[in-house]
Image (cartoon, rainbow, N blue to C red; front, side, top):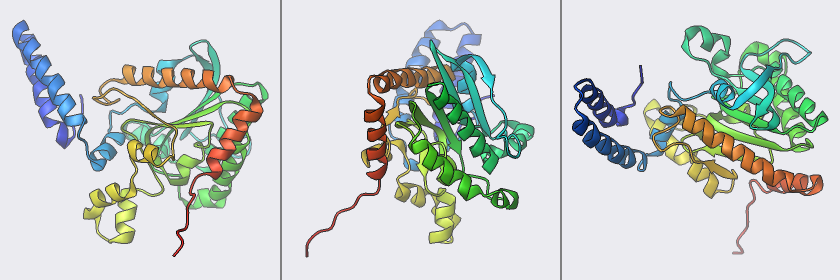
Length: 314
């Protein structure tokens, strides 16, 4: 059963009316209601606030990394373990084909239902998850395979065990190694990109975000707790943090916005997957047209250009 957010209630009502009309075989009513639905969708989704986009990024029905992998990939083979400690189910690594391209796909997986959420640790990877991702990246580099990374995490797991196994080092190591990895890399925020947990698989030749995804240094809840000690300030924090795809694109912190279906990936998973697949293949073609030296220099220039500032003479 579909889950509707508060601002989607009018859409829910129209869709329920369409179902009733279809049961009655009232084709005229279905036609009129379908037109009403299109208008309501356009009106609702073209005027979303940052907080509403955050809600969409966390929507229970939004496709996760494994959904995209199952839709886009064929002949997929999962890579397990970091060869140091264990396999982390919060990070997925697959070898397979997207279109005619043999690729390595890495993604953070949140899981649905209590059992799977616990298995995937709510999409919060341990250090061994990031080390597994790096192992897969090195494998891709060895065989000159492009890499597609799906970011979707509230953040790296902050538990005692993760800290004992050096969570910060694992993230820092990935930042270093991915910055100089000699193969084509594309990373896409498909839902929630939280802090270092997202950055650990976010260093790439192309960093993009889905239309209704978010990318932030801290969650709005964490921000409101630290700055105001008031959970009611979440909406204010969301706006102030500028975590939406449009905000980050305008600031030059991401390369592109993937144009997922207007009604959202949670309502059209196939359409969302097609948008992701088309973007990946198009950008891969552009990256392959460059020499390794030019591509790596562009990646370097982009990374060192983050956080630039200027000074005004008094």
